[in-house]
Each structure stands twice: as structure tokens, then as C-alpha cells.
Image 1 (tube, one colour):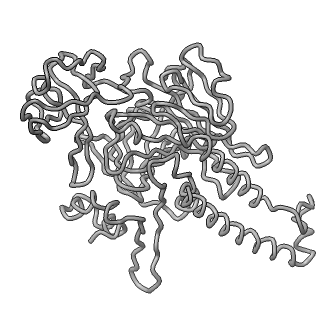
Image 2 (cartoon, one colour; image 1 turned 90 degrees about the horizontal axis):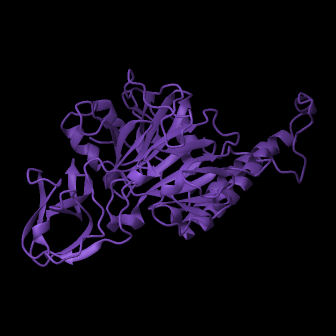
Image 3 (tube, helix red, strand yellow; image 1 turned 45 degrees about the horizontal axis):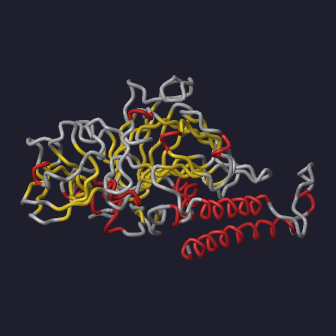
Length: 448
């Protein structure tokens, strides 16, 4: 919290200095310059500038968000700052989620609509969703975070009766014999590890046939970087008298609440430069793969990403740290490294989510994700405010890469600067070495 406060203070000091310089210049400009403004709205001594008003609202919103949602529960939505309007999949009262710090279970929530940044009304819709995705119960405290900022609507696409609900705590036992750990609940699945007799096991589910148990186990699966966090062990490897009756059945197509969702954002940016545009920010545990689907697009991240619409029918994915993969584990898989973005086109509005309204857009079947391109300075500038998201509602600090443009003559290459380049770039280093990423991409990432 101290780091958040100091970072926020430094952020606002920088913007306040810029605002001071602007006011100073305008105040001492010739009268003929001021007279070009017939509304007479130039700031007078003692008056706040529009930027300072925006900063005050932003400061208030983020501080209240930090206080309201610091202790939110797994598989819940938390009301971070006004105004956020819900609808529910059952008869839950709207008053249940009507002011900051209110929480509701994700299984009851059909959709959320945030308000745009409005400095006059001191309004900026902020909400936090902690969703489990494909992560095990052992990582409930590190469940994926989804932060809604501004004029954004998100809608659940997992019917509540069909949602996989993991236990609040895993069932802890010990293996009674040496056993292999497999990637799936099938004897033919790949072996990903093993345990010895007596090893502790944290179990959160059972296969539909009762022959396999899902356990918490982290293992590297991709480019010596990203990891899966679950594996399967034979039921015969644990005590036959172990009571597994409370464990949920987990099938290959099982989905936790909100693992699939729809999203629409405003496309006109924020009226206040310091605030980011309307967007969804998603963060998963460090280097652990999180699988979700948004607007019908399957995405796998081991990173922090931003999702928003840049046009009514164009969705953009921006990777801030780590790596994202679209079309994961298919011949069309595309790797999107940190500092890069990709876009895809969407359909007109349809009735697809669980609120039974014609207000959802999905990936157009005739459209593909674009080739990833590096973030622009404009994108970086508009997203820098994400670094001020309070750490106590996230898994780790949010970080936006910087773009360094060295001075010089000739063919000077701009390079991204990352907070922790060794970790952030570990996944793409092997791809660059193998020639599986364009040379220019590797150069911009600083990977030799």
C-alpha cells in the first residue's frame, strides 16, 4: 500500500507540474490570445484547471477502490467506485450491488455496466472481478483479476447451473504410493511429473468417471516460461477411504464462472488525459497460464493484458507483461509478446450472453487476429495511468512498458524497456533464437 501511495503521489506530481506550467504560460500570454476564447473560461488565480480536477477525481476513485476492494472474496465482483450498474441471473436485488465495497458472487451476476469518466459528476465506474478461470482451488487467493474501468459493459457467458464451482479449500491428503501426474484425466495423457509415496496432495476435483483426481501441481509447458498449475493423479494413488463426495466433477469442457464473457467498451477515449480510456485490465498469477474467452475469442495469458474496442466492431488486445497467445494450441496460434498488440473484427449486436439481450458482439467468422505490432507512444501514454491501480486489489503491481528512442543518426532502433526484462522476455527469447519471431520484433524487445 505504501508503494501504491508513493507511486500515485509521484504520478500526480508529474501531471500537476505540467498543469502548473500550462497555467503559467496562459496567465502571462498577451491579452489578444486570451480574447480568442469568447466563453471567458481561462483559469484565474485560485481556480483549478480541468486537468487538476480530473486528477482529483482520479485520485479519489483509486483511493476508494483500494479501500473498498482490498479484501474481496474469490469468485466475486466488488464495487470499486461509482457508478457501476449490475443485472443478475436470479432474483438478487439491485441494492445488493449499489455502492462502493459491495460484493456479489459471480454466479449471480449477469452483467456489469460502468459509467464514463465524468469530472463534473465525480463519476468513474470501477469494478473488480476475481475469477478462477482454469486455476486450481489452491490458487484462489491468486485468482485472475479483471478490472473494469469506465464506460464498459461485460456480460457472463457461463450459465450459472453449468458453472464449475471449486471448493473454498482443496482436499489435502497424501499419496499412498509412487504415482505419475498426467496432463489430463486419461491414462494416455502426457506425463508432466510424478510424486513419491507420502507426498502431500491438494485436490480440488474428480473426473466424471471417478478414476482421476485433479491436484495442484505447477510445471513448465511453454518455452521454459509459462506454467500450468493442475495435473491429474489416479484415484488408486490415494487412500481408498478418502471421502471425495464433496469434490466437483471436472470435465474437459468445464468452465468456472465468467471464464467466458462478452465485452463492449466506448471507443471515444477518456475526456481527461490522465485517466485511461474505457477498458478491461486482466492480470493472472506470475507466469501461470490463464485461459479465458472474450467475445468468442480464446485467449491464453501468462501476463497482464488490456482489452478494449478501438472501433464499434474492432477489439484490441494489448500485452503489457509476459506473453499472450491467441488461437492457443492450434495451427493458427499467434504469440503476442509484451509491448505488442493485435486486433480482430466483431459482428453486429446479437443475443449471446446470459442476460438474454441483443447486446453482444463476437468474433466475425471471416476475420482473423492481425499480426502483432508494437505499442505506439500514444498507446503507452494513455495506459500509463494503469500503473496507479492499487496493488492491494491486484496480484502484483501493474506495469506499462516504456519505449526508448535513442538519439543518433542512421538506422536507430527504438527498444522497449520493461520492469523485469529477464522474466518478461524469457518466453520470447527462445522464439527469437529459433527464428520463430520476426527479427525486427526481437530487436524492439531487446532480445539478441
